[in-house]
Length: 288
Ligand SMILES: [Zn+2]
Image: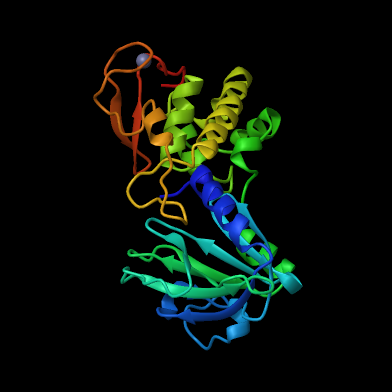
């Protein structure tokens, strides 16, 4: 599942192409991936709801969600879910994917060629959400998201972790606590900070919080620069791949030697999610 660095890498690709282009046409091949202005998956859609006739002002991101901001405060929020991706193609090129659910055709100024944006999602856990105003966008689609994980201040993180006795790993995955972290980066950040994934969030000390905030900033920033971690379905809109997976220290390395101490990495299920960590480097925390 794409996390903050993957979505940010996708955002940068989309922004460089789509900013200032206008949406000429849009077609929906699977109605159930679209949530309309009323939040429904079914019901009538008008071309204007999909942005037809409007110019792209910017491509934005909050947490793991992409936001195509159009004129007049209209926004299209795209959630990639487990297997969603966006592809950019020149007009007229063929698509080979049977899972192309939404297609937008965009045109730049003057005689510039048309570009096609495809939303493809084989497993359909992702979706396209339409907002008709800035307040609709903020209140219905983006409300409840915590601060961005890669820029959160240690004091803010400390305050947010105080509020829950769930494990630190589970708290980090909760998008209302911090936005953008999923299973890959939670494991990587906890390892870098030397924090046991099962330690209750409200027992995290100030020095630990400082290390966690530092690791969030450094690891997520480095992953953004590398185009994210390409695992399974994550690809960039031009078909390129991210290169950060080769830097993973723990994710996907259960049973292999820890890069720091050489002991075998443990892989357990925690809060329903596979979790890999080093019991030696990430210690036995004081609360069991
Ligand atoms: Zn170790």
